[in-house]
Structures are given as structure tokens and as C-alpha cells.
Length: 415
Image 1: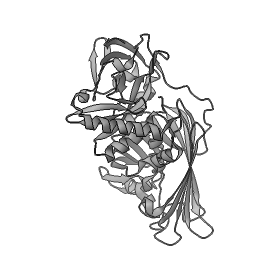
Image 2: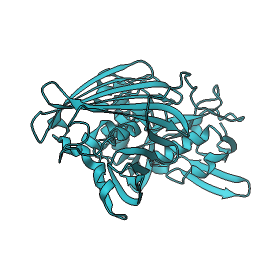
Image 3: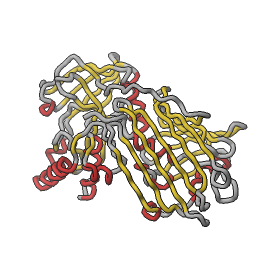
Image 4: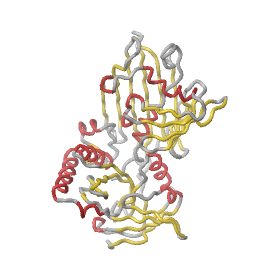
């Protein structure tokens, strides 16, 4: 059920895409025109060191540009994830990408090897690494749209709309919003090298002089304990809770969740999404068949964290996030308006609390229907508290939950 902080794999992919810099000779990004360069970045979650990124640029003995990137990150509630990536370019201008090789080791020790041809990634050239240089030289107020470099990982097709906010002798500051709604900020050195990158308030990527020491302890999965017992969650149509602590201000109203503020604090009122009443027999059978197919293709394995759907289908192991991601792909291919959502879900009376979970919403008519392929539910229960849609908001909220608590106000009907 539980998974690492929502979409952290996507966050990591998008940060790799930002490791661009200044040009030496015209049209050639820095680090490829001489002896090569190395850059090191520390990954911080809520101010604490959580990982590092090392990037090396240079040329092969044949003169072909090459870029190697290493990512190590301790995923909260899961463990250490490692990713190594190599980009190999043609020796002659315009230096088209020939091949991307990627190795991933998940927190549970599962290894994935992926090799992609450059033409499968859109045949980008080395000059595409220069995206941030435009931000470093554009006038204040200029708006720049920057795509994710080479469709790296799950950031494929991701575009950020930047605005140059300020500039001084230390460099340039830009603010922006990604296509997925995440609010981001970027600080560049005068030569265009990224010095700091922030997603929401909780995730920061910062350039440093030497590799940081990573935490060695494996943190336990997040569980928001409550004193009440809900019984059979599948019977719950409505659930009201009170959130106490910094997470209270970060929840947002959405399908199946209403957020209210009163003298007692922030209250969340969840309800079973009522689209099930409009679901005809044919659509129900189709959705149930897709849930069954997901459960046939994927074996539940906490911390599996495959880097892509292709890797998931090859290996066959994933957690609730992968169950939901595969269902979204199948439902969208079948013509449904479907999306993946994350939040807190009741983990059962034995555990006695709410834990991070991922499921789906499918539009039926004018409303949405909850589908939970991990738990084999079409028309899921109301014992879940939905996170905001944008990854930055999700990340900030889940970090804040560690310093917050939940009280049950009302259960309808009682379990």
C-alpha cells in the first residue's frame, strides 16, 4: 500500500534535466569542449540531506561527447534508490544523441537496465543542453518555455514556463510552473550553470563542492495513527477528520474531499464518489477487466519503484503507485478520462491509521469514480484523503504530515 513520497521518481528525472550550463565554443554546452567537467548537487527534503547528483561531461577517445549522471537518493519510508545514466552523442556536429543507457536499483534491491536509441527519444542534439543559458541572459520579465531534456525518465514531454524574476552579480533567479502544476524556482550562476532548484517548499537541489554524506538509516513508512477503528472501510460512505499541525493548511478540496476551516481547526470531509450510480453495466465490466489485467500483470512489492511502465511490465513488480499508473495507461487507451491520484488511505484496524496510497479517478458523465486496482475496487470507499494534484503540493504536504496528527470526527456509516 505505502509508497515513497509521491512522484519523487518524476522529481528526480526533472532535476536531471536541469543539469545544463554555459557554452564554450558556439553551440557547444560547457564541459564538452575541453578536459571535461564534474558537477555535484545535494538533494534536500525539508532541509535535510536526502541524496546527491553527480554529473560528468567529456569526450570519448574518438572525440564524441558523452555525459554521465549518477543519482543516489534515500526515499523516505523506503530506502536508497540509485540511478546511473549515460548519454552518448555523435562525434560530428550537430552531435545528435545516439544512445541513452540507464541502470536503476530500487530501494528493495530490484535492478533495471534500459537502453534507448536517440531516435526513439526524438533525436535531440547536444545544443539542447543549453536551455538554461537563455534564462541567464534574457531581460527581467522575459518568459521562457523549457522542455525536459531528452524526455529523461518520467519527465518526458515535461515543459516548464519560466519567468526571469531578478538578476544581480551573483546570477539570475527565475520562477516558473511545470505542466503538471508544480511551482518551481531556479537560481543560475552568471554563466548559466544551475546553482539551486526548488520544487514547492520541500524539495531543493543545491550545487556543492564535494559529495555529501547520505543518511544511512532506513526511515519507517509514514503512518498517521488515530485512536478510532473504522472496521470494514469498504462500507464507509463518508468520513470526517480534523488535521492538527502544519499539514492542515496544505490540503485542498477536490473530487470526494471538502476542506473546511472553523474555530476547531481544519476539517476534511471525504465522501464516496457517486459516479458509480451512473456507471452502466458495460463500462463497469470494462473497468473491472482492466483492474483484473493490472493485478495479473503486477505483483505487489513495496519499494519496487521501476523507472518506467516498460520496466514495470518486464519485471512485473510494483507498489500501489505502479498499479495505479498502469491502470491509468490502460483506461486512457480504452477512451476513458482517467488520472492517477495520491493521498492517505485507511491502512486497516490492525495498523490503526492512515498511510500514503495511490489510486485512480475515472470520469463518468459529469462526475468522477474512484478506482483502486491495488485493492480490487471499482467504486472505492471514502476512507481516503486526497492530496493536491500538483507534485510540489503533494511533496510539501507529505513532508508536513510527519509533524501533524489526525483525529476522527465522524464515520458514516460506522464500520
